[in-house]
Image (tube, rainbow, N blue to C red; front, side):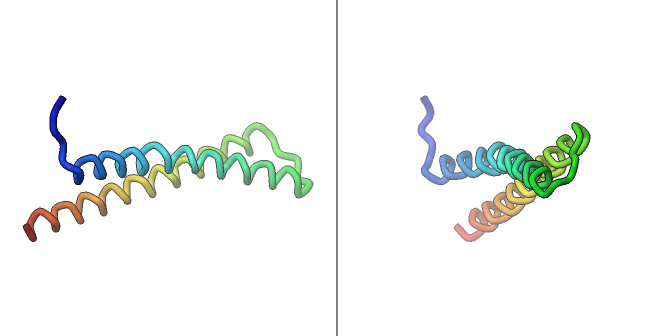
Length: 82
């Protein structure tokens, strides 16, 4: 087993959160908004469900990729300051 520093462990944890948890949370939010849409009294179809879930999934994915971009930027700045 390799000896990883505490900073690397935090980096991999952040990667997991940004690239896995954000899109899953987006799917859950899309699912919730679908049921709110249904409760309001509209007549949703399978197409509406897919749109809600896919749009929120991709929003979570884009937010995660942007978070990784910022994290890598901060990591480079940190390595230059040392």
